[in-house]
Image (cartoon, rainbow, N blue to C red; front, side, top):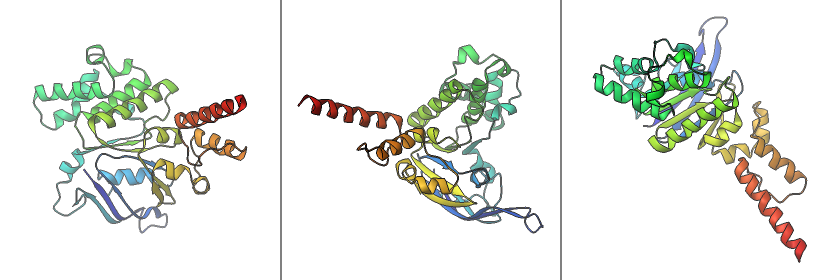
Length: 290
């Protein structure tokens, strides 16, 4: 399922003295099966953009095309298109309300008019994909769970509707390291196994380094850059100009290069930096024996 944004502009309070341009002539494309990370400082337009991708907001001007169909077209079935694009807001666990985990996850499929058997199958499918054991958690109250588990239940409620695209706005915000790692592992597995297109907004460059196949950098309501994480994180000056940092591994790589270490300039993952350092150490040891 492809998404194309054409010359999208969005103004809050348009025509009033407090009119604010949140998106300014944004054009981009998201292809089927991608894991796209959207990064930018606070107020750069990230959250406004993703709310346009499933039709929660209407553009001031421009278009959002879903498989070539204008999401805001005059005769389009917006409800049907929106069901194919799942949006998970920040702190989605605040929206949990049912007495059991299974009932909460089943809420969306019930509204789709599915049979009881199909609903139960969807609940099991969604719980498996967020790494929650059905037999252990289905009949528990969601409010008895940890914060990270509650968030996974909320994400499962979206997955149960089987969207073609999953959009997440800061999915690890406020979680402890263990809860954060479980969310990231779950998304990593979901993308690899189900081939779901994922769009994720995050302030964590380390999370993006771990998961994203492509990054979109936003600043002042515009797309500043788009490319692979390797391409984007190698541009430290551009990132700094947008008020953004780079992953810890990229920082360390840069510092080591300044100290004279023979390292590629575009390393951004801990695993690959470690491999290069061990290779250099091995070469140094071999040279000292000669």
